[in-house]
Length: 144
Image 1 (cartoon, rainbow, N blue to C red):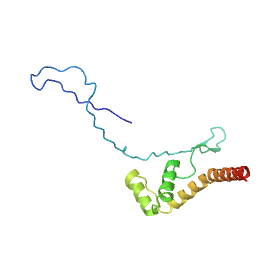
Image 2 (spheres, helix red, strand yellow):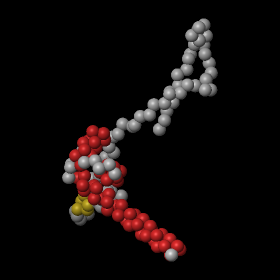
Image 3 (cartoon, helix red, strand yellow):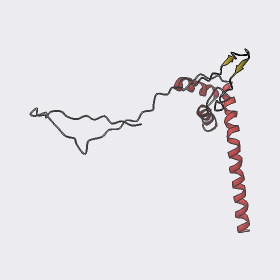
Image 4 (cartoon, helix red, strand yellow):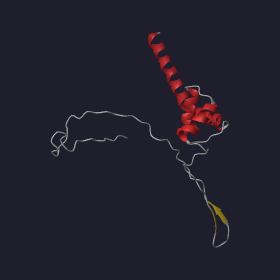
């Protein structure tokens, strides 16, 4: 996202005449800022209703798109990135998530999220490894 704040003179500083128009080559000064982080919390509800004919209780199914755990994909990915790439401690990850993103997470939940990330990355990692091994074998046959 970007925005432009224009500062135009309105009157001549010497004679006070009204200024009209726009400078085609204005001086520019850009300031970068990160957005204020705020968690997106989605509450899923499933209701149980009684049948008006027979009185049986009927409970709705959870939506198929509902994540199984309490933390979404981007949060899991961030935890995996911080711990796996940068070696940030679980305590520091929990502190950062609370301070920066206002997301409270227990120390015990962090390794569980790391495990979920590892499980999600296992199939593509295995496919990449298999591809590299196949390409290596092809190159050996061609040069051998």
